[in-house]
Length: 302
Length: 232
Image 1 (cartoon, rainbow over the protein chains, first blue to last red):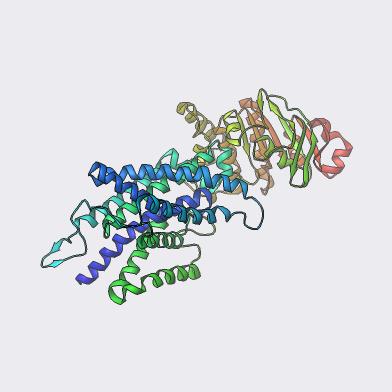
Image 2 (tube, rainbow over the protein chains, first blue to last red; image 1 turned 90 degrees about the horizontal axis):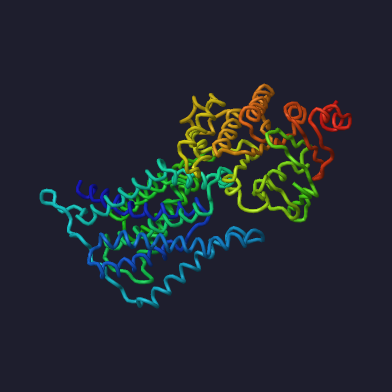
């Protein structure tokens, strides 16, 4: 029983962080039709910046929003300087359309190397702001620490805020219209170019939060070639795809399902199978329901 | 508009087309499939780039700037094929047209006007646009364009794929918009007869060139136009 509860807790906890990453991938996909492989690098950079900010301010909860803002600015800059230019210049030829996607792979390597150059290739350590010892239920210690709980609540809070922005505000309406039908959005007077940049900026903030929260939720250690960040990119991407790639609720659902499935494998079978199972799940969903959990060919939902 | 030329890659879609629209009047642009009608409107609203020539609406240069700036200067374009965002609700589609407007009171007034013009939309505000019938979608598209408070409205084939009765209704509404709101409308239509009946003036396009132009009444009476475009 306690093992089952722990499995749920671990699954949902991990899934919530994949959800932030998946949201970032979906936002970028929706605004520019680009799969941003550099999302992991951008999250990593934001995490390093977060590390510096924790050192300076001594408070993780001040560093987190600041790192998110800087992550958003960096992401917006990438869209304006790199992606926008590439989309404009790669309208024909065999690689048209995938040029920006390949460029994000280049950017991923560039960011990682730059981080190594600036901060060195050794691990840095971010002190978790809260205890990581699990709560006690009776005699048993469960797989939920105050740190885990706060990370979970923070993610839920961010998802709720994002949902509100998308469904209830004018900015959200502009973002959705520009994603579904850029031409009609333009004809309605929406500055689609600026809205795309904002989509990237929100993605950058979500990615920054994913990176920092994952780090303090885990070992607290980060290095430029951190395996955790490669996994974060992979799992975030898989979650986004099985969620339908167009839909924010889909991304969250995909991430939680992925987190739970991986927790089952990890606890009841073997931790070494996690990577394989994640891809098996991706293939299975693509075979059975290629449009993802949420989303259909006839109509996609925001 | 003078000597407008638009190229699609190696293909010249529009060659040296010139005509004038009168303020507060309904001008129809008719012609067969591939005559360049849609390209013409898309160029006027900034979606396509012109190769040469000029096009002005009052002081405003229509060949310069992005579609979103044209809208903000009073030029609204309803593109071909029910120009609505299928995934958004009816109300969101309407609101979309006025998001950029600073004066929210006026925007609310425009919404009231649009809903008075198309009461059917009012009953369906929270429905997704893709649940609407073809005619209702066209009404929504026009309603959204009116939300941007245009003085020049560009309509691309509003009759496309609609039943004859619905077409009649839409055409009457368009005429009504011109008469009651004082808007200038450029109506592109393959349904030449229907368009000529409601239009004040008309231009006939053929393979990207102006074949003939004049008042709508004269064109209906012109034997050549009748034979080529009206089918009798």
